Length: 283
Image (cartoon, rainbow, N blue to C red):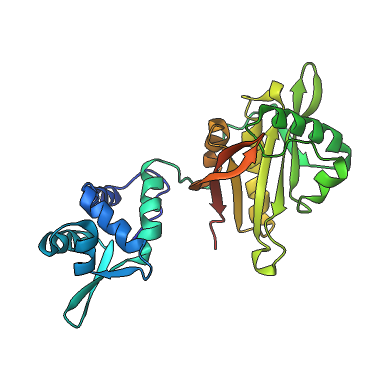
């Protein structure tokens, strides 16, 4: 199983490969078989054990194993008189990658897009901006679809969360005056040195400026400055109900990795989040 990085449309060769993969899985028995092997304690089962687990004959099981092996989902090794079936490790990343490509959630990191709003500018955040930044964050908290936090942190706590050199504000006209319309910042994900280039991002836009491209301007600044500043991976967690934010991140080169089910509670209700990630191109 090999995957390709699609950046400008989907090639015929890739489309044919992915169609073959999906066609192979268009059989409930094969899906159950693949799941049974991958979720087994050892990651490998004999054809006989698989047949017993699935309630099918060994000949039928062997047929489905052969079909899965033909496209590289599983490997079959002969051990004595038994055929041992194991999952191809590349399958674990290849299938999600294929789904991302087909659904259009993989895109190139932005580089000087032409559709940034001309009336919005971005610059480095200063301490003098923190009161306005905090007010915008309070607006986001009130929606209950932006963060698990329910209380607005004080200015010192807010500022202490972010990596130096990776916090930005967007300015533009609102209600007749020039003001801060939104902000973005990157926080470290770990104190361990090996993760020094991995950051967790956040972006917030004041209610009156939403829909004007402010978020796009902020993410353009965020990802380009992160690339230049030595960060190699950015990640974000977004509520699945916040479709606008997910689409915004996809437009900036983030891809969906997973849905984290019931990851935390907000106002006593378990909520899911969508985990998104962007990897720097040149590494």
